[in-house]
Image (cartoon, rainbow, N blue to C red; front, side, top):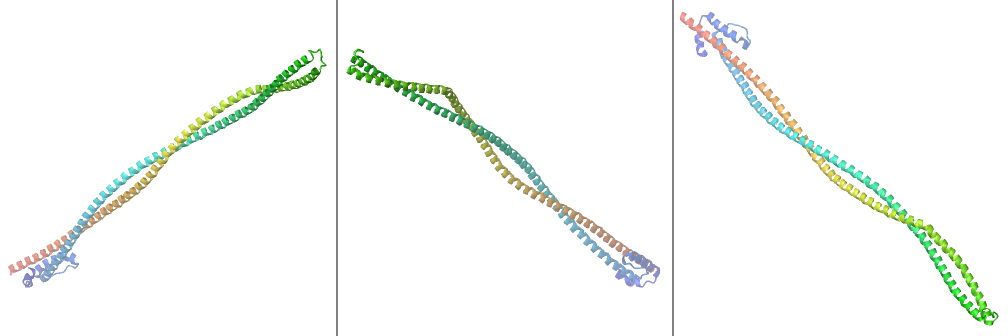
Length: 379
């Protein structure tokens, strides 16, 4: 319209009215184009109007680009918000898994402490049983040594008594032999004496030849009997001494019997203590076997604990990483939202500039048109 109206406007002669409209347009767009106030012709007004239209269109394009940029940022912010929500959910899940593993670790630690305490108690009890068994074995050894000493004393006493008995038997046998010899010699002497009495006619004829020979035999028999009798006295003394020794050994024999019974008692005590010690040692071995089994469980628990700790560290680090990603996404979302708001604000400013330019240009054109119509009516 401005281009069609330009030849008509150029024919006007009322410069004052024209300059009023041109001055308003120039004043309105002076801020946009940074030009000082000046009087413009209708043609210049048209040019400035066209230029203002172009400038407002440029502002509109820039505003559209800012709105597109803001829309892209909003979409990107929505994606970041979804990412933040997703990572936050994953972080919560990872934190829950980490907490669950931590709870399991606490339970495993409690079980491990119970196992260690139980194994320690079993080993301590086994140690006490072994000490008791060692003490019983020591007592049993003492009892055995006492029994052996008493038995050795008994056998020695019995050996000595056996020797004394042998001496008594020998002396008795020897005395019996001498007694037998005395009896035999007495019979021989009696026989010779009888024969001598007969030969000497009972002492009436001692000089008889037969009596003389028998007298010599009688005298020799008397000598032999005297010698045998002398041996019997010594044998009786030996027998009496042997019997006296046997009498002396009687208390020793009684004591030896007591020692033998004491030896048997101590040996029985030794056997009883040994049995008790073996029982205690067996109990200690059973406790140590249980402790070894628990040690195996402790090793298994330690391996499980190590695995759970690795899992805990994994879930904890994953939760921290996912939470960091979520926070970073939230920060990025906030930045994108801010940039979108700034872009929309800038787009609004550009659109407002374009609107004001169009309005001012249109107002200037309207003023020129009104002035032209007034001049035509006057002419």
